[in-house]
Length: 329
Image (cartoon, rainbow, N blue to C red):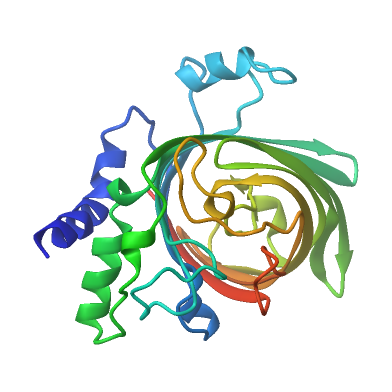
């Protein structure tokens, strides 16, 4: 119980830790919660995720510009925004009451990571393109603290006690590099802004390896100020925020994404030690829809995600919800 409280305390202190990093004023603090309950479903598979982000426009002397200059296709002037990220995720089978190994369902897994994202937005006549590059370092396994955290949380809410965490994946460090590119046509329709276009990307590393493509559309007021469609791993998102504006701005959005999954540690099991695993589906698709509200320095985004079956023994597709709250400081 003390260990679980320690993990929850660290989660509450994480925003303060982000402020100690060398950033300039005018950044955006964003807290995101991902859970089955946000979509009206019960625990199982992707059970819970949380991420805290500090998003900021780096000064010319900031080290992220030097990093961008070393990357293929990027220059020191390409980084419009950078983000420090800290996240935690939990994965379980559907039946969390079983004490024995549930062989035909996904493994128990906890993931703890820290990440850096670089984002770029380039305007063209009648359209724009956005790019996002993501680097994540962390670990999967008992050291991520998912078992103690879920047990303590279920104790607080009087939920079912999760009994199968002794079968979770073993400790393993993870490295993940992800990239996403979007080409967005801009138009006006019904007196509002309309933006739509294709996306493509990839991920490399021992956590996920895949290629992806999709389509996204947004409709509302003030789309030039932001590009922010929240997704849940292994999908990626690019977040671009412009200058804050007065009054209410809003948009609704929808998207489709298909991925060819060459590797998924959370389903394939540990790389170097024996662990539970299931037969991964190579083709996975996401459909998502949601809305965003902005008022002066505040933004709230809600996303519903429908995901096709990720492994052959899975009986049904999954549904998750994501809720994020952002404040410009």
